[in-house]
Length: 438
Image (cartoon, rainbow, N blue to C red; front, side, top):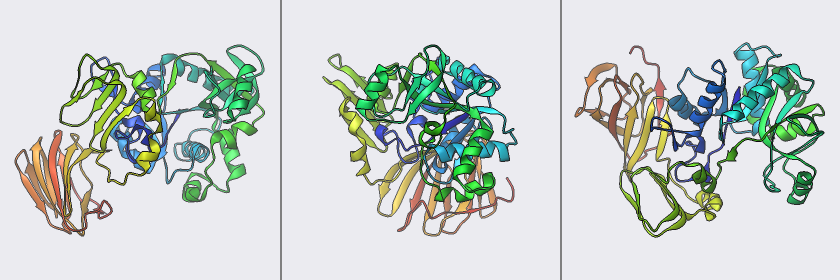
């Protein structure tokens, strides 16, 4: 299984940003009362449908830490895109990764699906059916078709040759205009669900026909120079041997606040109170302060360290141009070792709350232009500062001058407040080193 995880998710600001895409927002309530993200939910559902499923996530560098944080470093493989180049290069790179790095046979069939559909278990049973068709059927490419609800210009259209669960495809057209889409729907077309099944060798042949490369490593090195093109345009529209599996179950694209709140099982997450006059109001509050809403109708309120959104639900779909105007630092991010949240920004100081997961550590590193102070507030661990190791616990204070090499290792979940001091505080001011011992 190849899972595509891309995008910056600006339409779900302020919970999403350049490094925290919408698929990592934990808002879906589980049976035990905890919350999971779209990425966690989809990977859990894949494993429920097939306990032996092998998952490779195709994603950008900026998302690797969040994936490791939420899914673990050993539970999934990651095909890292050096930069964003749309779905065809991403799928080609992932296929080359599976064949050349993981040693998977070119005859192996795989399914490609997005990381962010809101679906139930029948969706993943359909994925298994698609894989079987790619292994045993006559088609080079198997698509998922979804019943359309209106002539949208956002989706591709699949026209089956016959009715039924599975059919050959007579026409595939990616994102036509509304008039053409309406005509396709009249003729019985289905929406393209963005899911594909094929043999690895098939996609690698298509990739070699369009790109001059020898293997995965060569493709990775040339990736930045590749044109941005979707898999639908590069492959699906040009393929004559297509099959479609008709999926008629529940399927939602949670790309906006309006659609996302429709999938929420509760009206508020976090410290929020609404009075009895509120109607169709949803609140997500990630701040450590209470949020009170009164007399509001059809509104979404979202508060995070990135900012605060108060919007009519319908108007929330038009958020992106306004977010693009904002110039701000990332205030929250998940890393492979834990997470950080910016608490205060001054001209010559930055204060951050850091949480490290048990058994994890920061990189061993130094900074040229800033001093740092750590105040441990919870948990236990040890620091290594210029090679000197010491145990730390709540109340301990560790100071590091500019140029000093340092790291902290969490024995239990460890929380600390980090104060950065200097005139040139920058995320780029970081030199990493190998740690000789732990």
